Image (tube, rainbow, N blue to C red; front, side):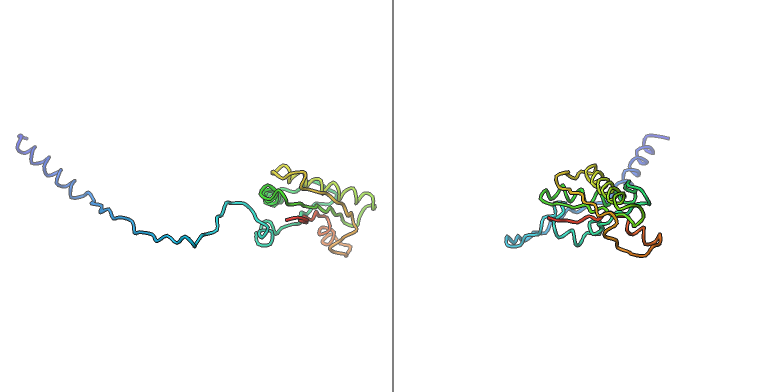
Length: 168
């Protein structure tokens, strides 16, 4: 191949490459009219009192337990995290954890079990970032059933801790 042929080949490649490149026309952004009286609410990612009634996670305020158990089940960890974040975001918030048991067992045993369940939820909330000073545990034992039939389906509804906000 002689030099003239090589030069023609290089020139053809350069023209082909130039034809393939895109030309981008830069346009100035459209001016935005500022309205000083109009302000959008700032979402800082923190919970507010209204979220207790609207947020799907915070609306879940009952933690259920297995028979004769006081350990928080793994499926309730997300709920613990939501309520702990609310407590972090709202230092003035206060929660009462109401421990309950089904009708089986003595009155004294069920009061103790309800307290252990309340303490387990308190511990889970604190582990997720909640403050102990915002939490109060109360045990009602078998005294406040949500269901009064003597059957497992009913008993399982009574083995619970209810999260009650006393200050939002």
